[in-house]
Image 1: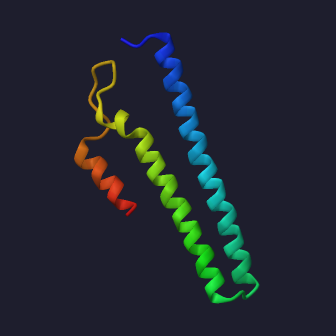
Image 2: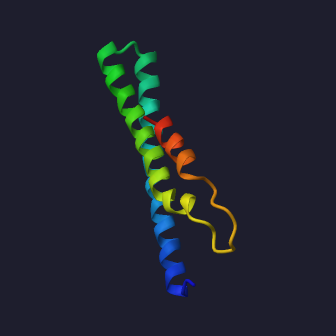
Length: 99
């Protein structure tokens, strides 16, 4: 059974993980806006592709962060005795979809 302290810690951890994902997604959004502007301005192909690769990496990292922060919860049954959201094979498939 979890104590109130455990619940607070879980909530803090979940909030920090969510904020980290949001920060990564906002960074990717800014980078994508820059790519669009670069294309509209007919910038050098190398610069556009370099920036586009940065967007892709930022999105990948956000996806990996989501999966990493939820891995334990996805693989364990909820406290109410229900079934896990995902089994190990489903989680692996989701993880590999980002690779």
